[in-house]
Each structure stands twice: as C-alpha cells, then as structure tokens.
Image 1 (cartoon, helix red, strand yellow):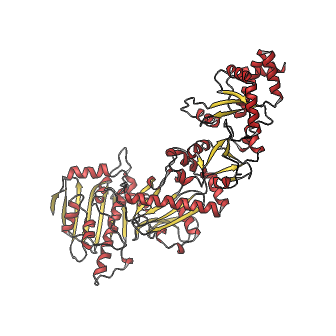
Image 2 (tube, one colour):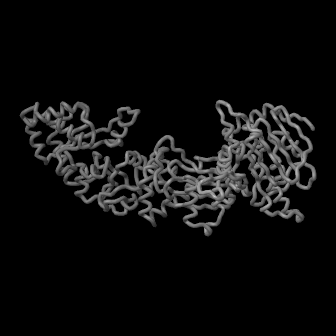
Image 3 (cartoon, helix red, strand yellow):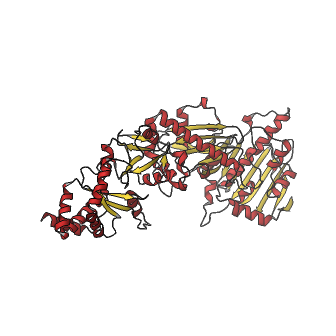
Length: 625
C-alpha cells in the first residue's frame, strides 16, 4: 500500500472545494453521477476509432447502492475505469481533470459532450462523507486498484480485486450533527429524488434497488416488502425529441411532472437552435397566475441544463422580468460554466440564448393575440399587469417590446382592445388617445369628466389597474398619438364649449378667485368647465401626475404625500351655479358653505377622502335647514 499526500497545497485547496465552492451538499451526487457518465462516454469515443470495441448501450449503466447498516453510499459505473497512474494523477491532484485531458487528446467534436472539465466535482463527496474509497479497473487492464482517503491530509493506493471494468465510489456517510441530517444520504427515497432533480436526463440508465410492497400470497390484506432494481432516470429528455414525435398531451404531462403549475399550460414553445450557440428549450405560458406571483417570494427563472445535467433550478437571467411568468427548461452544451458547475458565468452565450427566448415568447404572444383572441384575453387576465409593469420599469426601456401586447377596456366596444385597434378607429379630428382611470369599469362609466368626450363620439380606454396610469406615463405615445386623461385640464378639443368656458371664466373671475382662496391651497384653480354636461362639479388635474396616481401613491407604505395639481371645475349651466352666484353677491357665509360642499362632493366623486367628514355632514345639514 502506498500512502501519499495530496498535491497542490492539498489541505487549503480541498478545504476551499468543500466549504466555499458548493452551496448545497446534495450536489455531490450530481457530480459523481456526471463523472460516471463521462467514464462511459469515454468507452463510446474509443469505440468510434477502435473497431475491436463493440459499444452496446444496454451493457453500460450507473448503479447507486445504499447500505444503511454500514452507512455507505456506492456509485458504480461500467465505464472506462482508471489505472493506478490515473488514480494517482486524477484524484491526487486537485482540479486536474481527466475528462478535459481526454477531450483534448481525442479532439472530441461529436454530439456527445464530456461533462466534467474542472476536476473538482469528485471532491464534493467530502461534503457528506468521512471517508471516500474508489475501486477501479481500467479498460484493457487485468489489474484493479483501490484509492482511499479519510481526510484532507492524504490518500492511499493499493492493488485490489475487481471482476469487471469500471469504477466504484464508496462514501462513508458522516454522522448526523445538530445542524445537518446526513441520514438523508442513505435514504433511498431522498437519493432517488436527488437523482431525479439533477441527473434525470443523463443518457445512461441510473439503477437503484428500490423497496416495494406486494400482497402476500394467499392473503387478502397482508403485504410484504421486496427489493426491485429500477431505472430511476428518464434518460431521453423531451426537448431532444423531434416535435413531430410529441403530442399536446406529452407537453402537458411534462408540465405536470416538473410541477410548473396545477393548471394546464395555455401554450408551449419548443425551440431547437443550432448556430453560434446551440440549445434546446421547452417553454410554457401558464393559464393561471401562481398564488404567489405578485409577491416578493416569487422567483422567476428557467431550469438550466448543460448536456442533460441540471445546473440551476431557477436561472433568472434567461427571462426578462416582464416575461417572468414563463416556465420551462433550457439545455445547452455551449455554456461556459464556473468551477462548481452551480453558478453561471454571465457570458455572451447566455445573453444570446436569453435574447432569442425573449423574441420567441413575444412572437408566440403576438400569434396568440392575432389568431386565438379568446385564449389571449384569458392569458391577459392573469398576466396583463406584468406586461404593464414591464413598460413602466427600467424607465420605459422595454416599451417597444410590449406596447402591442397590452389591452384596455373600451367605452365603445365594451370589451378589451389593443392600442393598435383603438388608433385604427380614431376620427381624423381626434388628437389624442383618451383614457379614464378608476377602480372599476362601473365607477369610470359614472365619471363626470367623460361626458364631453362621449358626447363627441370619442372612444375612451378604461384604466382599472393601479399600474395603468404609470405605464402610460412611460409609454407617452403610440403611433405618434399622445395619451390624454379625461381629467386633464386641456382635452385638446376646439369647440364651442371651450370658447364659452373662456368667456365664463373672464365673466366670473372674481367668484372663482374667491373660491380658490376659500379652499386655501387645496386646488390650483377654480374655473368654468368645458367638459361637464349634467353634473355640477368635478376635479381635473394639471401636469403629469393624475388624481388616480395620487390615490395609488398615498396608499403605499412609504407615502411621501405627493399630490396632483387639482382644478375644481364648475358647470356654469347647472342650477347649482345660479345659487352659487347669488350667494357670492348677497351672502358670503353661504358662499363659503357652498364652496366647501362642492369641493368635498368633487373629492367623493373621485374616490378621495374628505379631510373632515364631521364638518362636511354638518355643512350638508346647514344647507338642508
């Protein structure tokens, strides 16, 4: 037996491997299975150039064996094996990859990929094991050797008996601690779950002895356990199959198996790209909003695989936030992985894939909108708000991507319409895209501010989401048509009403100035309304911040008391104005009372709170007397 020390500053480097590189202990099994897969791949590559080797896939597999009594976990493969020298060289020098060397020596360009290239994955075994034993017999050799290490101090190599070619890695699992339950790694159901999570699509069978139950012979209700060898991985991932082989049910089953949601997907997107970056992907547009979608706990991202091995459970960099509802997987052999194969280096390949995915999702949504309107409207009920958030976020940098996907309820059509549909119907004399904000369609339909526009036959978009006004403030215009709130001080309509309002403002200048002074800074101005027909009073706003935006901002936890510039508009054709005018001329106290009541009425119409409800009700009582 030879006893040797680890090379390359062994203790310090191995400590780094164990304690810093890997963030989840369960990763060790992914690494060891990936190494086993590599070992079988190497036999496959040799068979390509050596006619004496007959590669029959059925003879190649990985076996995971649990021994609870001896507290061991064994990972065996029927791969190429290692000689004594290779054991010493590959396992004695940390971060020296036998796979990378093999790949370079054999100039591998075939579709199969050698997964391990860094030579550190093996040492992740020490995350869960006190001792690691490797028994290996190399292809073409009659001799086998055992490599063993019980600490970071060193290892031993000695001859050993092994009947078949391949490698066994035996881990002596650590005892439980207060913080860690190492029993998980000798539990067959936990180990099976880890294999399914990370290594389900390794191309060779991963076998395990699974405990099952069956009815005892001759008994009606007694069961007995038996051990059955099962293949626990799927091997061929759905995304590598031809689309023509797959049915709608296949895609829906995969969606369910991956626990992407309890609903059925509204649409799936199957992508196969060969080019500067090659990758396969299956993406899903869900039908329903996940219960936590609009909470801080929701984590967007796609499952990321490299050569069938899961690298990240949620790779957020593959999806823009506004498409964060999309579920699915991406698998590529072209990604540059970091040393732990856990985190992705943010490189050109990833950005290219992300850009392509974004365009594919947008294209699919546009097709849905154009060809399956009912389905799109169903989708929009669930995720339309997210698209509008996308327009508002990042200072509107994504508005060109999203503006043709958003919809609003139309006063004319009585249903959801796109901006393109609205603009296509605009009369030649209409300058703006008009919108009204409110808590519901029913509330908006009762707004006094809509009277003039509806009377002119103009279509109004109803904004009922709290994000709508903010999103439109970033969008600013669509096809050179600016947006205009029905509560805006200037509706851009040159009409007789406008001319008359200007005349009435001049005629009642003193009255309106006195009202403004009575309201003492609550409004920016009081003026004759151009828009009111039947209602006596309303509020309009000047500037970018609308009254509805003020309401939303005031409801936020970090309320900074931001106020819209309000204008109190009076309908000079309403009988109330005659009473107001008479009070102004004859009874200043009554004039003050009327002013206060009209202002508070305007607040209530807008859904704003009255600052002093008791005083308001007392004023109503005074009027009733």
